[in-house]
Image (cartoon, rainbow, N blue to C red; front, top):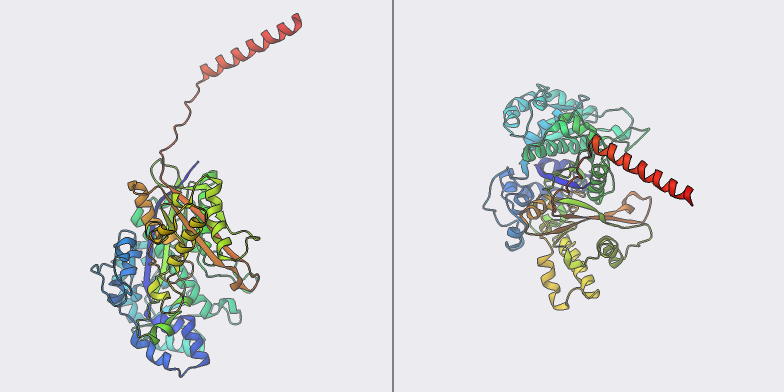
Length: 514
């Protein structure tokens, strides 16, 4: 049985005040150097929602522009206004901070999020006007608290402040007095991740038109961890987000593998569907506050906007074969095993050429590769270069070494088989999956036949191993649903049994005659 991609959706939440107050680059700087020039200058580099909406890579992420159109625009892009200013796209939407703060409160089931009454009253209608928002979500909003009480909670109870346009408008309270796993800081991180995952789930239901009651399992593959002192990181983001999104027939679990988690989760979802365990599985991920303004120092130093001001999210729907939608080929999986090593060639070999060799294919038989799709506008000023381009150069060089590509064709390989990076640097978010929506469309249209999605991760960040991580999978155009064998009726079964018994009797008689 094949597992097909029924649809994909992508969301962004513009959270400029969280850049200042919650991104780890800024919170760390506030501890080690509270009077730094960087902290003083950063507020003047914050973008408005309108500027974020008019940013080329963001428009690609939600589907209003394509990676090819982005590639035709000279870098850098942060000084160029996109001709599309729509916050809604065919794949998703960009949500402003005021709406997102209300969504956070709606996703809170332990009364940890407090918002000022006037702020709720002023922004409730804006959230209600969002086309993906369900009444069941809106009904969860509270009327709000006084600003004086919110200030007291922040100053005296260790609550994490929530800000909008530079003003305190709410807070996230701690969930336990001494458990660090339930501190206000951690609860804020987790509620942001949960809320952006809920938005992604609501969005994918909206853009695909699927029946939410058909979703049987949800896999969350974000980078956060939730639990208490007795089971830190125990989960379950997936089920908690499914609850708010109204996926009442779904169960779920979390998949954690740093930046490679989305690729792992897609393989797991495809395997669950192909096995018949579930008919419909949704892979989802919310965003990460820690990554907001992560490269802010380099951006400010170079006079650029603080480009890491978006919380990212996505959701992909995987169902049983319908004979139309592209399928994930489970016979063509790449994996970075324990013994692979961390040398670049070894990594690319394990993730790219090994699965191709097992299926008799060449590197050039994959029409498009989607590895780490980080936006180079963000990474290049920070000295990390163009990450997708570096991946394509490695893959192309390996093709030359294998005799599958002429050296003179190497430069063109990165254009024909590569993609321009457009995803926000939200850790796991760029890891291959942002292209799935475009890939599905191109495969359905017959423009391409195969796409390889590559997820890579840094396991050593957990200080438990120095191992690298990575998996890959191939999406292929659907050749059409296989015709089922014609059913055999009762009469045919009786005839088959009679023929078999007659044959047995004749054989026995012949043997006795001998």
